[in-house]
Image (cartoon, rainbow, N blue to C red):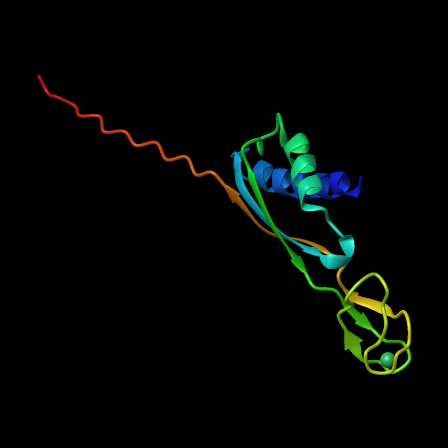
Length: 126
Ligand SMILES: [Zn+2]
């Protein structure tokens, strides 16, 4: 299942960020995934949960959204967002085209937990 490789790439990037900051636990990861990746939300959630267990991202929440695909027609050059798997240019009717956008995986942000230790030690002089 292709969601597993996506989950691993997301996790790898988040763990890299965590490692660069002294191994702080990962709290939240925000990503954008192109529509042509055809992610099945449940499958990605399952794959991410499986991949993160036992890592500093164990409690991390994955937030993702799909970005629309954009196809460039090779006959007339106009760009369009396909309605389904079959790409047909709405301007000239040509089939197929070149992918402009829609296959990407963008890691938008990784939130690491900030650990604030508050100590209110009161020293009493004797
Ligand atoms: Zn066209």
